[in-house]
Structures are given as structure tokens and as C-alpha cells.
Length: 317
Length: 295
Image 1 (cartoon, rainbow over the protein chains, first blue to last red):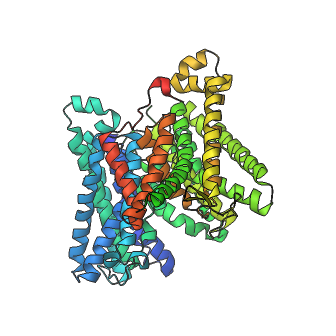
Image 2 (cartoon, one colour):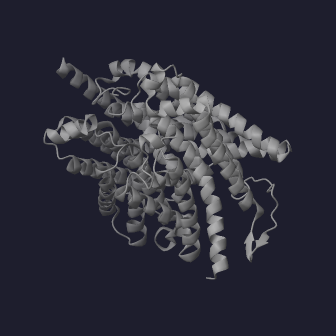
Image 3 (cartoon, each protein chain N blue to C red):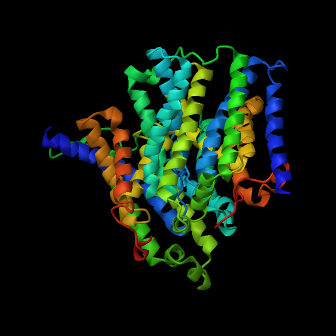
């Protein structure tokens, strides 16, 4: 039974990826194509939150800050210092991971809203520094002229798709690994985890580091896609949107996270006919999803997507 | 810097600080009653400012009437929010993290709702207390500084009297301290939680309508104000009445002093850094709320 489930789950991810692989062939208009690309890039940061929130139970509202660190590191390295984009793509996540590890330190002592406020403050500090450090970041004027790692749009799309697939599989595998089990133990009961020999501090730090690494990677890809960076793309509202994507995806569900990243990124475009009210409708939908998450309980969704990685969405006390 | 300038800065900081304190007090009230940290407080504050804008500026109602209407409208909105949205989630034993995320979603919803209703442009209304500074002992004081202090002082006293002297207030505190025991004693927990939301949103609305003549209203303003209120409530001590007030005033004064004496562009960074340090060194805040002190 377990094997059948696993097979089914893998299939679902493969089916999504294969369908997405057909997109460039189908001749989608360039703007819609760009939205799907952005959805894929968002999927990586949403998966980073799956590890942090879904697996480890740590809530971050500062991930836009980490995204910004990745994006600006990539932008500054390639534009200002003329470094090879491939090297920059590898450096950017490392820088984000280093800063994210720093952000992990408060999580030793703080939990719940205290930690959330710390992450919000972190995100805002990053944004204000970018805004005011004009020499390095271009400040409010932004940083332009960023070249992508792969110049051709189609090539970049397939590169993104492969990356999302790899990161998804890695995130799934992490869930069943020793590290993933330690994460989940911390989520369920920190004291019990400690008693069972899980080094809580080390694993919290690890969760933040892995998550920040992925956020940084997503940021670098963001820079590749937009070719222009501006502090307005990294506000609290962005962090909140990523968080809501994870919730919508089922918290610890990898396939759900990818689907919700793609769906929510496209939603404002799908609702474009409503012009001004689309963001209100969109946030109202999110409010309702949260309100009814327990009664929906992802039961139907779970049947379609396979067994979730962690506990249920509304579960726990 | 002369002493006069210094005093002037302190007064200016105190004024902003009291506005943060009101919003912070609302967060503390809800935290005590439900252990929920309301991340939408800043946006509820903003919408309060906009309701005031409509009542006072568009409908040209007299200031006290517009003030009352705003508080009542927002209070009722808070009450409905609890009845229709948050309380059912508490009752169904939702994962607290999900409810927390619900407040984040609410924040986005309110922000976009404001954008849709009132548009993206900065708006403000004439300062009802006039803009001619009064000179007291060589210190120039804007009249709204004095009025804000008076309004906040009256509110705090009234709130304390309400919470300690009336049946509803005592029932609300009972729910905050021991919800199960309170419900066994015949206190309607749902009603009291919703009343707490009413008070909290009302307080947010008042800080919103006080801040609007000082900082022009824009739909996103709630974000930054909220973090100041969070900082105030956490530095002061989450759940403590005095803590919210003291925390707010500390934030307000520290912000003005840093902006003037060091560098104004990084004043928010300074506040957030202080907040993070505070959380690391003394997570309970200055006034660690114990049961008896819970509002």
C-alpha cells in the first residue's frame, strides 16, 4: 500500500512536470509564459518554507528578505563585478544561507509570535538596507541590466523546470531522512525530541540554513527572470504571500506546495478581468481557505495528490 | 543640542509613542484572551484612519461625532470578525499557527480592501486641533501633541475602570486568566472574546485616527506601524497593560532621538535591531505579565 502511494505521488509530480514541459511547445503567449516561469521560481521558495514550517514548525515572515539577499547577491556579482552568472548562481544561495543561519539563532529561545516578529524585523531590516545602500544596490532606483544564466527564454524555462523537479524530489526525500524525522520531531514536541536525543538547536539551525539556501536560490532565479531588481519586490506582503502559498499547499505537502505556488502566482493574472478588485478577491479566497482548512482537511486533495509528508493541515492542538 | 530642542524631541516621540501604545494595547488584550498574536492590527489601525477620513473629511461631520462613529464602526467590525472568523477557529481547536496565519491573510485582505475603496494616493485631513504651535517655557508644542496625550490618558483610565469595575470587564479578565473556570462560572466565553476583539479594534481605530493628521494615509502604512506596535508590545511585555504603554513610549522616543541624533534613514533598522536584541536577552519584555496583571 505504501509503495503504491509512493508510486502514485511520484507520478503526480512527474505528470505536472511533463505537462509543464509541454508549455513552450504549445506556444503560450510570452507574458503568460513569464508568469509560469515566475510560478516555478516561487515554487522553490515555497518549498523552502515547506521545510521550515511544514516539517520543522517554524514560522517565518521574513523570507522575502532572504529572497532579496539571493537576488541582490546575484545582481551585484554579475552586474557590478562582472562575475560569471553560473558562479553567481552558486554564490547567492550560500550568502542567503549564511544570513539565514543567523536568523536561526533567535529560534533557539523564541517560539510562536516572538519568532515571527523577529523574522518580520529581519525582512524589514534587509529591505531598508537595500533601499538606503544606494552605492551597492541602486537603492530606490533599482539594479538593472542583470543577465540571466541562460539567455534563451525556452532554455531558462527548462532549466527552471528541472531545478524545481530536483528540489521537489530532494524535499520529499529529506522528509523521510534522519534529518527530516528530526525536524518533524521538533515540530511535534520540542522537549520530547530533545529527550529522544535530537539536538534541537542544531536541527533548527539546519532547517533555517537549508530553507534560506533555497530562498536564496529562488532569489537568484528571480533576478535572472526579471533582469531588474527593486526593493519593492521584497516587502512584508511578499513574505506573507509565500506563507499563504504553503498553507494553501497543505503545509508539508511538496506537490501541493508546487501546485499552489504555480496557482497562486497565476491567480492575479487569471482574475485580471476584475482589474481592481482581484487582489481583494484573492485575499478573501485565502481567508476562506484558512477558515475552512479543517473541514476541507485536504481530504479530497489528499486523495488526488497522495499522502502528505507530515501531519494534517489543521491538526494538532 | 540645546535642552529645549531635546525636550521638544522627547515630546514629539512621546506623541508617536502613545499612538503605537494604543495599537500595542489592542494586541495585548487579544493575546491575553486568546493567546493569538494579531498580525493585522496595523491594517485595522489604517482602516480606522480611513473611516475617520470619510466621516470627518468627506461627510464633514464634527470631529467628536466622526471620532465616535469611527470607533463604533471599527469596534463592531472587530466584534463581527471574532464572531464570524476567529472564534469558530478557536472553538474547533485549530492549530494556533493556522489562526496566526489567518491574521496575516486578514492583513493582506484589509490592505487590498483599502486600496480598492480609497485608492492608492496619500490622503490626509486637516488637523482638528490646529497647526499653530503653542509656546510653553520656550518649547514649541503642537496642540495635537497635548490633545493626543489627553485622549490617550482618558482612554487608559476609562479602560482600566471598565476592565476592573464593570461586570463585563471582570468577566473579560476572567476569560483571559482561566477560560475553562470562567465558562464554568457562567461567563459566556465567546461573548467575552468577541468583546475583547471589539475593544482591540476600537483601540487600533483610535490610534489610526490620531496618526492620520501626522502621517498621511496610504494603504500600506499599516505594515511599518504594525512592526512598531509589535516592538512596543514585545519590549514592554506581551500581555501587560503597563508594558504596552511603556513599550510604545520607549519606541516613539527612541525612534525620534535616533533619527535626529544619528541618521534618520536607518531609524527603523535601529528599532528592529533593538527589538531583536530585547527578544534575545529578555524575551518576556520589561513587564513580564503574570496572571494577576493580565488585562
